[in-house]
Each structure stands twice: as structure tokens, then as C-alpha cells.
Image 1: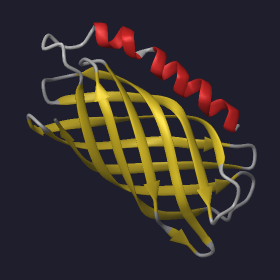
Image 2 (image 1 turned 30 degrees about the vertical axis):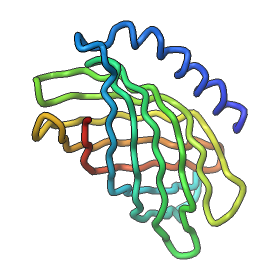
Image 3 (image 1 turned 135 degrees about the horizontal axis):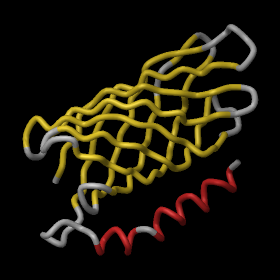
Length: 167
């Protein structure tokens, strides 16, 4: 699955010139950074010994207009018994739908690499969705659900709650 990561990132980067052509009237892409509490769950398929914990996720991205952004995630932390989340790292295309000037729904599609307890890293296509509520012009509260890994032996999902600063 590691070979899947490179084509997805390349496709996201290929979309940058088209998205930049549609950027807001200022002509400038809008960068942002965020931090979230990451409530993750590793669910082995066919077994009842699921693992869950809480970690930290950092996000950074560039919104090219009100409808499209590219975003990266870095996460770590959390332990459930013998299982520790060493890291997760991913890149995503983000489609956004503004419902009001303050409220946006969004969907994410990309690729993620995840490593537990120093074991071999796994990578897969990842997807999810969420909502963002603007408190001030440059600060928003965000909540999302992500399916980071969907392997034959297990699923790795997370719900995240946090804040984003828009430059």
C-alpha cells in the first residue's frame, strides 16, 4: 500500500495550478494551521479486542478558494494497553461546502501512513468528513471523522475536535 501514497500526493499536487486559477478575488491562497484532540480506534475485523485512545493531531493546509484546499495531517500519541500510536502522516484534497458565512461542511480524500509500536508502517487511501464553524475571521472550531486505514485485518478510525487559525 505504500506505493499508493505517491500517486495520491502527485494527483493532489497536479490539482494545484487549476485550484490556484480559481483562488479568491485577492488572488492569494489562504494558508491555515490547526491542532486537534485525536480520539482514535483500532478495530480488528472479526475480533472483539478493539483498542482506542486519545492523541494529538496537527494540521496544515492551503485553501485556494471557498471550495478547495490541500491539507496535511501529523498525529501521534495515545496508548491502549500494549498498543501505542507512534505516528500518522497524510496528505488530502479537501472539498468544502459553505452553508453560511461561518459554517462549512467538508470532505477529505487522500492517503495516510500509520505506524503502531515500531511495527511496519501501513498506508492506505483515507477519507472522511467534518464541519468547521468560524468564531472570528481567522479562528474556527472544527470536528471531523476520518477512516485512516481500511485493511483486511483491521480498520483505523478517528474523531477529532480542535481549532484552526487562518492566516
